[in-house]
Length: 210
Image (cartoon, rainbow, N blue to C red; front, side):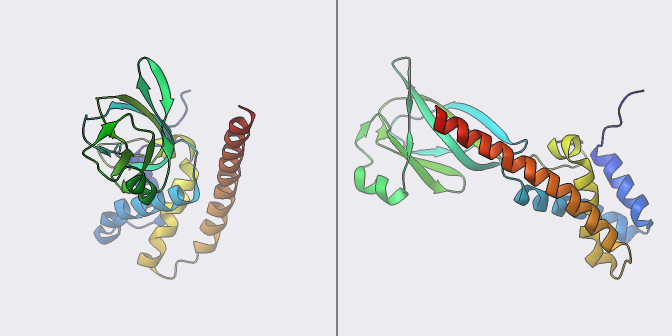
């Protein structure tokens, strides 16, 4: 018998069933309950399911580089020069501006910083179109009717269900089951957060050993 896999559609149906509400006002709010639950779970988990590698190419004479969609936090940055991989080191934006005050001058980038939420800034300004690779934490692609599954539905379906039910409580008001759902959610998230911490600790240990 195949395993049951949570989807956006099945999650919405489960929420409706658990809430025992079929009125239009509640049903129309279910996508909002799911979205809020995803955001809260993501804020509590730092590493699980979202460590991603992105490769691209810099633009010569342009120090600003667009980050990938759903970027959350950069882990490492390197470029390829003469077939060799070279690390690009994280520094504060102010340091880069002081180190390379004239962005019209070019060279091989040695440092990067966050320019804004959607861009990095590198210095020196690239003198050619260097290939680069970034390891970063990515925000999980949100669920909707066109994106039926993601990391949460595969690896944290119970957290997603109970988290969505909890998000419904301010809308429904005075539901006596809130304590039960909160207890279930807390237990599930405690296990996930502990696993998350172990992965972060393992990565830090590997970084120190290497």
